[in-house]
Amino acid sequence: MKRINANTAINVLGFKGLLTQKNVKFFNVNLDSDNEAFVDYNLIRKKASSADKLAIEMVKSIDSFMKNLFHFAHFKEQKKLSSLLSGLGETNPTSLGFCIGEIRGKAVGSVLKVAIQGQIEFLMQSLKQGNFTPNSFYFGLDNVGADRTSDILVSIIKQQLIDFTKIIASQYSLPTKSFVISNVYDSSNGSLGSVICDLPTYKGRSIILLPKFLISNKKSGAKAFRRFMSFAFEKYIKNDSAYSDLIQNLDKGLTKKEYKDFLKRNGIPEKEEFRKFIKRISGLINQFEITYSEEINYLSDEELEQIVNESIEKQ
Image 1 (spheres, rainbow, N blue to C red):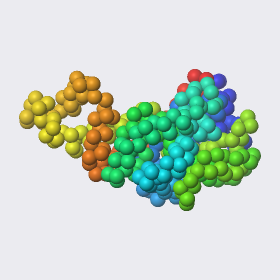
Image 2: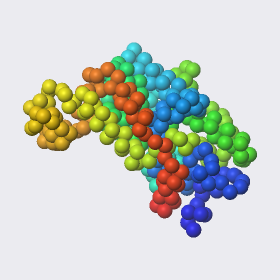
Image 3: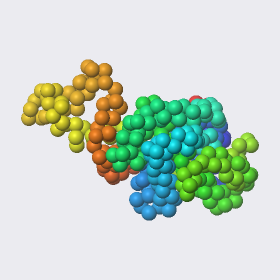
Image 4: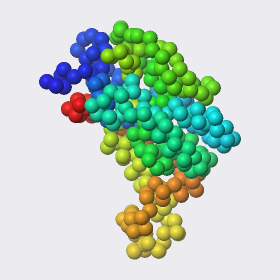
């Protein structure tokens, strides 16, 4: 009963008819609490490869952001770099995050800015190797996981998400209200600014809907990093002469267990170890993304509903 009466997007934004997660294109979030889900760059890339116009525009915006980040950092344009990073953070109107029972996520913009600026040297080395991808944040930076990478992505593609929401609102004749949305990235000039737009509203706050194709859960978010580590190990680390002393069986070569035991014995964090290879091997993350795109799957409607149901039960 709690789930049936929950204040989800479908239930309270003015949709008419018997709609469910299965017959709409957006993620039917619980609007009274954060939903433990991520926006996944790998899913956006996969969708863009199928010529989806919205996903293509998102990729263009992300590419623009990454290139401007590199440009501002490389040429030490600190004011522009600081401004660009200041806009990163949780976008509360999407209802994604990890503040269950709350509708306003904790401010993470300043946290992300400090985390990125403090590790800008590594990030620059990764970008110089051609890894102009948000996975450079997730795979290489300390204290930046799938959740904070998602916050970064939502900030970058906010304009496309607003456009998507306006299309849904028009399609279903939803009541809207005019809002000023801050920190919207403009790929034409590489800056963040405010836009005025008509959006659905709930309890006086703006609502930005998300296409369900880009939503990932905690399990899938963790899987991406594990698969990247496996990819790098099989393609490069396994045959690296620097680890030859670890091999116990020459016929088998270096095993993942031997490698992981080595890291554990020496107290070496996985991200710290893999940073060496990201900096050294040209396009390592890009190579991984090509293979991973073939194996990653969009969440099913049942999996999306499970995320929302868990949010409802915990609030």
